[in-house]
Amino acid sequence: MSAEPPVRVLIVDDDALVRAALSMILGGVPDVRVVGEATDGAEVPAAVAAYAPDVVLMDIRMPRVDGLAATEALRAAPDPPEVLVLTTFDADEQVLRALRAGAAGFLLKDTPPAEIVAAVRRVAAGEATLSPAVTRKLIAHVTAPAPARAPDSRRDRALRLLDGLTEREREVAVALGQGRTNAEISAELFMSVATVKAYVSRLLTKLDLNNRVQVALLVQDAGLV
Image (cartoon, rainbow, N blue to C red; front, top):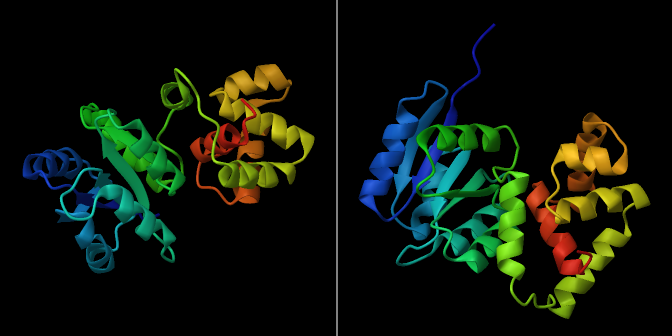
């Protein structure tokens, strides 16, 4: 049996030291290959076309086209690679915008090397990189201390999408919005963890979303938690 091909990674960051560090971390892993680098979001379309990455590590703050705009454009294109946004976690609204745009999650720039590698693998496998605990922390940080109601257009859209769910699907969605783990949802809703996972997959398909973080944000927009 042939081995799976390595995960192809494109690094996008205007800091040469960051690019070098990430290349060194990922370059030492046999099942991951850094296929290219870009120094600005403006270079992303050409770099993606040239290198065909599976995963793009995307910095937020870059001088010409920032990582948010680059992520939004990239995820709107046909058959896009997954995007991991790099952040220092001091710009929560920017992280929120990136997740709404379809980024698979985010990494802190001081994330330990082993966790960066694991995150790349998870994203390549179609999983979000945000643990439920981090999801809970992000949502709490964004909505505190005085949570503002989502704009009516966004709230109306969220309510319309969630209205199409069954009662059980809606319960799982709300639990995700509360930052619950699969095990916690299993205990609260009296279903197996495997069934919870199946419901999460069904929600992603039904709502046309990329990961559980986007489900949580949709529930937040609808004002259900």
